[in-house]
Structure formats: C-alpha cells, structure tokens
Length: 70
Image (spheres, one colour):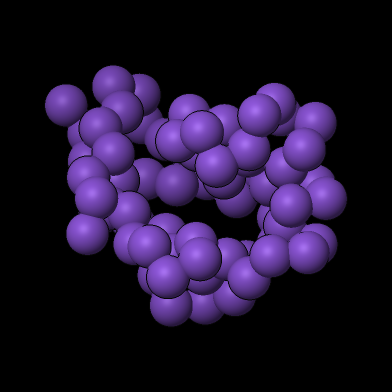
C-alpha cells in the first residue's frame, strides 16, 4: 500500500488523481471516474469532489493508497 501525505484537512478525489499522476490534469477526472473503477474505503466512488481525509484508502487499478496527514 502506498502512502500519500497531505498537509490539509482533506483532498478531493480529483486532486488526488492528479497529485498521484494517475491523470494528467483535473479536467480528465470526470471521464476517468466514468471509465475506471475506483474504490474509496471499499466502496465504489465516481464523484471527483469526494473529500479524502487521513486514513482513507483509495484503490485504483489494483493499487491501494492510504491518505496520511502531516
């Protein structure tokens, strides 16, 4: 599991996808989430505005990421 560290209270799923270089820019988030299976804490998620907080786990293409706050 990969650890992703943030220094804010939360990061949106769209920002997360861009931050982790899964997508190239924020405009790609909507299409990516419509065509790719993404889970947040084990639940299917398609909202790019979903707030991710410390200890949330995101699974994209069989890779899991855990959000950590500094």
